[in-house]
Length: 283
Image (tube, rainbow, N blue to C red):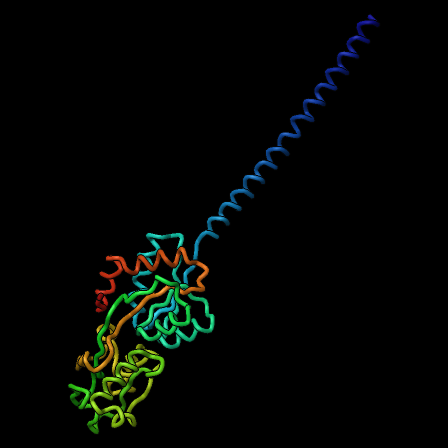
């Protein structure tokens, strides 16, 4: 009887030790699973951050007259190329040219005049082989809807009823340069000089006429058809240099690969059709 008790005691101790070992092994499993879960979570976060970092943002410096067309084109392009996002910097071509010359971030330049692009090309700031004329436009004379006198030509601007004529700053706004050139060839610029107010871009000229702060103004046809002004006269194209819209990739761009993709898209039939919707013409 005494021997059986000792044997039983030993067996019980052995079983108890085995049980403790098993519990210790089981207890380590949750910790191991938790560590694995954390590693998977960290990996997923890392993959998400990597995906987000792959989206490239292109900065496009573009003439103000392209605003509406490019804003409609943006979602079409980004739907086709979700890895690229477009940011537009609109303004007068001359001002945008100066920004690029001074090192402002830009990947592509769309100008409303060849001279602004040519200056950058001569300064080796446009990527070789990636510049071309994209679109053309027309210059028109517009007036406010509520005017009480007729304006049918440039000569009518000399009438006493016309107090203010708006044009873009000739030195920096191509539309203003074209208007000045046309008026000079007609022998009217000096006569109209006391009446002329200058605007920072063609969109501001439209605003001056729409609000009645100017009786008439010279703008692109594409801007006029989208506004509340009246097109009273189309300026003879022989009076000014051809209105060409060149596009070029900036040499200093940090996203040349993506810039080339957008450059090619701008010259596609899909993009050309959209530009035509806004009154632009191709060559």
